[in-house]
Image 1 (cartoon, rainbow, N blue to C red):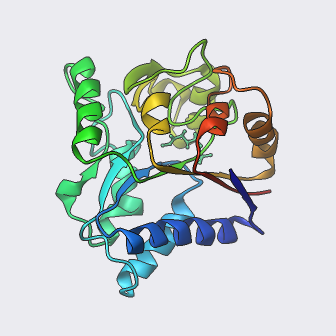
Image 2 (spheres, rainbow, N blue to C red; image 1 turned 45 degrees about the vertical axis):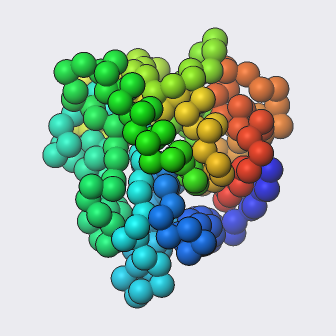
Length: 235
Ligand code: F6R
């Protein structure tokens, strides 16, 4: 495990983008596992800049996102589809057919989950997975539980996650109550992982996850078992 303390959010974003950019330079047809949330926005901004000035080419890159809310259409500004297009895909030369976000409004969600696992296999697995961490230790939408979910599945969101997301909605009632998410097993299969955390309020959970016992009560703690994990954080 490599742990890097960044000076501030800008520095964290630059370092994260540098590692993602290096991955694309090394392997232009990389499969990137991407996250939404506030943590990666700055890194995406850097990558857009580097793409637009010709330093980084996304034309052969494939992306696989971690998760999506159930019940939101792709055009809903609160959906992760929308977020990813706004914050990255619309601004870089990636093929639209090469971007993948789990479907949040599929009729048969179990089939949607199975298809997503198959998709990841078909593209040859994820080379580099970017992760944020929730205040309760969740990664993607894998919430504290009594086991580590192996595969892509549908989850009921916890009250604390619904509370944290409420800031993006007019009222708490509008916040989706379930989501489709890669499982912990799916995430752990990525060949390398970058976990980013920004802000003093993330330090306690980060310490618990990285140096406490490995337990599904703190889903991110499983990352201690990954053999190519880089953690970048700032206070
Ligand atoms: C988003 C995701 C979530 C976030 C986590 C941290 O795709 O999977 O697990 O990474 O909730 O969110 P921020 O970055 O907003 O603190």
